[in-house]
Image 1: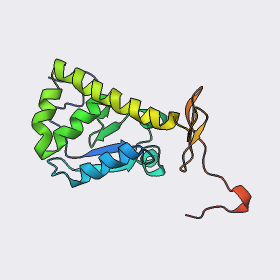
Image 2: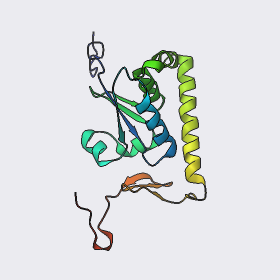
Image 3: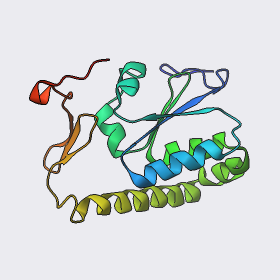
Length: 166
């Protein structure tokens, strides 16, 4: 029996997952490269978070939040964030599905959350070094991070009169 708002997941299988990752994060790019080399039971598409493609494909998502926390979208509209996103990605991989089952238990979920928090701390330390210095961080795709306001999107402009053409 389904409940209101349930997409009847018992009868709607997941046939594909889209992983939104920060393309300008070296750890995220490393994990993206690792994921594409893994045998997949469920196909994974990897799309840069906050990109034009991500905004077109998933207009209802908070794209600012996808830059803060790994986000995975299922082909039937399921949205997973943080530790749950990592667990579902592992579930999609042939060699790591058994691990995903262990991480989906209450004690495993604590471990998965700890791993995600450790990755976030490492990622944050990369911005906290001399390159970032705690000031505004600007990505080449128009996303800007200000520690007081969080992520905002500013479409790339025509600085110097040179506008990119599609």
